[in-house]
Length: 86
Image (cartoon, rainbow, N blue to C red; front, side, top):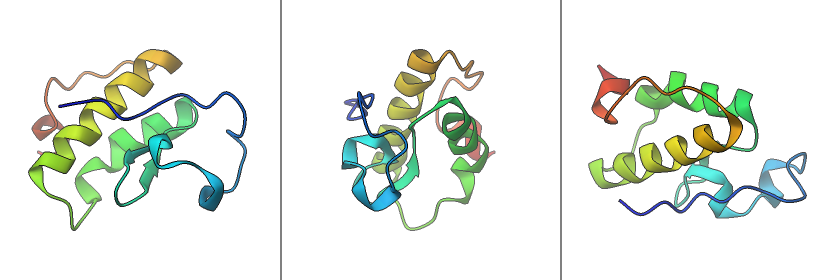
């Protein structure tokens, strides 16, 4: 799945409404912002709680989380998104 997440150069402290879609794990739904290491950890922990998304959207979100985790130095032990909802 294609990664849509992009790190923010400026504006990581912006209000959620001002963040671009590319700052979220689930960009279409604007769920789970990935603007710092703490948010990445939160997105991993709450991944299974996100409702109203398809398997394709979960796959994309997992790719986005892995990209953000790599950027912020967060270790992701899961190998697929299904590992996060088990």
